Image (cartoon, rainbow, N blue to C red; front, side):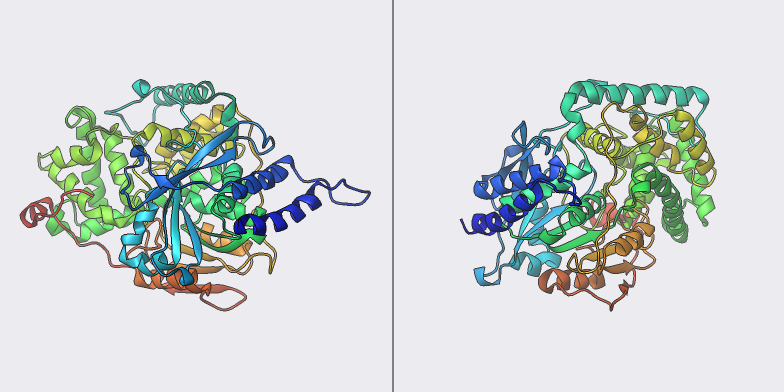
Length: 554
């Protein structure tokens, strides 16, 4: 009842001011979605969720409890259809007197779930944080059991082997255009009229309802990758509800960047990170034998691509699956040793390590992670999906709904043909992942201009790696510029996508200090701090892994 009283007093005053009839010269009445969000949050506070045993599908231990938080499908119609979001929680381990509330986490995507995030309570980097915060994860709308989005029958998914040309022919392009049109129509057909309501603004509104449902007067939140974007939308829409916020690996939030331009920038950044990986392999040529220069390693990779195009490994792994495996190395250098070793073994006549990585049992080979996801982040909190098709569907729905996209393939072809001359590694794969947005039938949102005025928002913490490929560093600089009073911690000369709670003690120190005390580094007007890079991984061949008993794949 205390949470209801706190929210009811503030919420009713705000609601009254929002719904008052406008007079001459007064501000216009608020959008229906704003009123609907207030009503939904009041209802959630009045009827808080009951936590209990987690659904078996979440694969969580008994130490984690789960509940369902109900939100409107359409915030303009809060009395209309509602959907349930699966929420997980581990209570703060310390004494009640030291509890600071709930820490809600989102790992990005779009399309990722954080229901396994409460398990971070058992990690050393999170021990002190977990002592004072309830760790809360959830499956956002459309994900998993939270009113799942579907775009394709599982039987229709391409499972490999697939090609991955860096210079696609006109015939190949026409085939991919046809596939994109089919996928977009499948989203509209299988999800129906509700498809239009899966977008980032609604994800931010859902976060406000979740805050109220948890009984928190203000929100403490950490988002990674895509989770930073709708977290920034939340900060813009509800600055008075923010207690503390961490933005890890930020998306560039400028409306003009959402999402077409961000994907172009991402493809260019992946080229640099791919070069970083090849340079590391070359430095350890005695271990891998793939070349003594980055160019030499590149030639080894191209030889493997050609061999897989002629004879797919195990009948399942072609160039597309090889590319997907190497793309993961661009997200996190923890993948570097296993990917380099698998490539080396394949070129020496042993395809099994590559098959194990690229086409694991029970997973469609070559499934591409969401462009904004962090498959190798230091802490993603993302539960592995039992249905990769759902993650792809949510990713597509959110990004296509969020903003206008070019609707003429000639624009995509022109922009990416030019870009591929500089960045061949990821450019066309990124096109095919996002091309359904050119043929989207649902209405588009107008991206919100993320920004807060001085004093409107408490200090927030931004974490970024200087060589991040999935969310290039320019996005962190832009987010700091737009969120007045924010602080930026940079891991220099490093490229892991998502650095909070990972292997850099300096970064973790800033994160822990902020969450425990609210203090941010640096001095006004531009609050910034730098951390040296975490150590690069040790090169380990598969032979040495077998001898030591170390698992051969990450």
